[in-house]
Image (tube, rainbow, N blue to C red; front, side):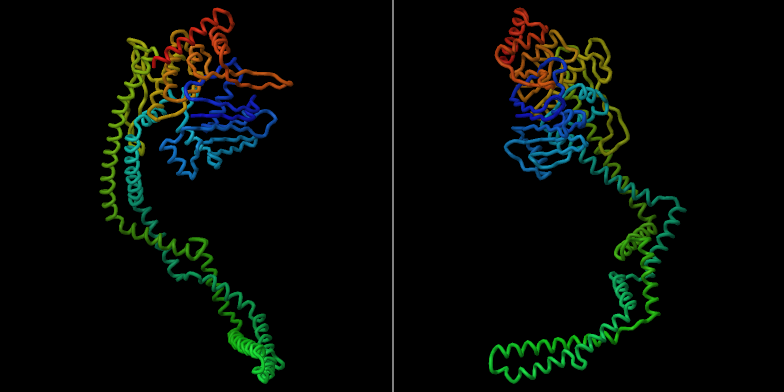
Length: 558
């Protein structure tokens, strides 16, 4: 559940920290006081679009944070673990908006994408308002609602179908490739043969290009190299050379080497230096003998490098990539040359997989239809509890071409009046009916999904009188099992709440701000009286207290 909501610099709210509790939390206030700001803030945590217009005028950033307790559901913990997020005593979801359009999302302090924030928050919190009502009534969402209600069994069936459908699609793709028309196939064969032959004739060796470049550099600098080597030889072993001087040093030290251990060490070091430099002299001499400028060899090297460069332009950025291209081309050539026999094998494989796809799709459809019957019954029960005693609800199926998600199109149909035919849910006209239908459907699906917090944003639109009391009781029942946060303008719903927050707009120092405070004691019936009639009087206060008493008795009974 949401334990605490923190808001900074969003619209008229500069700084707000609001604590919620288990049960029924209600938010009321005058029109325009800022109730929608709280809903927008909660929507940001749920991953909705972050409009820069929400950022308070004159501020660079806005921030919202929700502290969630009692979140340790198995699927949530698994999801957190999959993203490398450490679970703590509370789950901290936060989002920062900047005027530059940048979003910064965090879970327990760890940076995450907006999609990850949306996914984790959506497993714990559902928000229902006018926008969600439009989504609910759109046909494209109905299959998703049905599948969510079906739970793990439908998820497993969809996964089975998805796996076999992917296998079928892969085989079908290979088969289609092999079944290209003959002229196109022959053109492809000619191209592959040419490419393979061109690379084969080059007889490339890995590391060859680097060796040729090195040899080319040596040849182009042969005069400089020869001069340096000759000078080095002369310095090492010419007249007055280093080696001559070292010889003289050795002769001088040999006469005193046995007189002191230090002299012996010096003699050994000089000997080592002499033989090391002598080895270097012979190595330099060998190098000097091999240095030569050969125009014919240079031309040969440049031709070879040009050939390799041409192949790199066509087939890859390195010799390794060119050879990999050759291997792939050879594999494709062999497949095309043996395509007739392969086609027969792939056709049988595709046929078998298609049959498996049809079976898996059929199983998924059967499961969905069984689930649909259960869901229909559950929703009708909810609707009748909400005062629609003649309500009928039906989930209708149409077949479509099989895809990875199945072969079903579904649409919700409903009638709420006796004697009237079922109509598509999207054509429900009455605002009050629409609100109750959404409440019924969302209550059912939330119970199946184990959602811990349900937020209702003025779902009481178009409802009044006795029906307002029915809706209030329904939301009260929901709050018995999970946390409810409800924005309402109805006295009956506000009276059913366990905790009441009042939202008002205040002007201070020439600035307007939204203030939220918890109201208790006599302030509660006063606010309910205002909701009921707008004018505080003995009669309206008595009516408010009657609503509160009725709500208390109702909650005590269940």
